[in-house]
Amino acid sequence: MSAPILSVRNVESYYGPIMAIRGVSIDVAQGRIVTILGANGAGKTTLMKTISGVMDPEKGAITFEGDEIQGREPHKIVERGIVHVPEGREVFPLLTVEENLSLGAYTRHDKVQIERDRELVFSYFPILAERRMAEAGTLSGGQQQMLAIGRGLMAGPRLMLLDEPSLGLSPRLVQEIFDILARLNREQNMTIVLVEQNAAAALDLADDGYVMEVGRIVMSGSAQDIAASDDIQNFYLGVQ
Ligand code: ATP
Image (cartoon, rainbow, N blue to C red):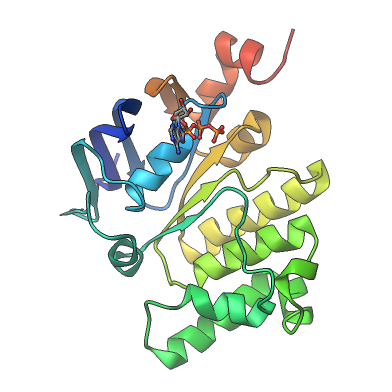
């Protein structure tokens, strides 16, 4: 494997006295799609928050493009090139689609490039262009998820962390959004880390995967190998 764009080494993060991730290490190669699977409470969201600086790890190191970034403030990590699209979308319901997108570019000053990225977002999500003046709260769940991803793209990232983008969406919409993620990966060379409970769709999209249980990584490998393993078939893919 070429040198990873992101490397997480022996990271521990706590909520007060509760250790939510317990010595986690992952590597993400440039240009790959990596999925992190696991049941509710396994620590997936905590891992994403620790990478994006929303939480500080108690121990361990996180390296992005050769720089140690653990403990930096979230906006510094966005500036550095990592964007986190959180679970539950969290768009601003009373602001328009366009205003939500502009907020995604808050760490940037290059107006020409920002305008180019807005057009890029509209080319991947034409419905957002159609509804650019609508308040985000009036969008459907799928459209809000598209807006959350579009807002992330407005930061001009090289690595996107996506927390459960399929949550609450119909299988058709999940497929539509995952197809767009595949195109962003292919056409924009975007590296993607995807946390998912929808293991089947995620393993189908991803190149590589990790499985978390109770704060630890218990399996890693190619998405194909993970999908073929008996435990994953029984517990995550529901094959009898
Ligand atoms: P989910 O899919 O439900 O979000 P997850 O795999 O993302 O699950 P985390 O949300 O990272 O899991 O949670 C990991 C552990 O940390 C769980 O035991 C959870 O109860 C605990 N935890 C999460 N958030 C908090 C919090 N704000 N305060 C205290 N404990 C928390």
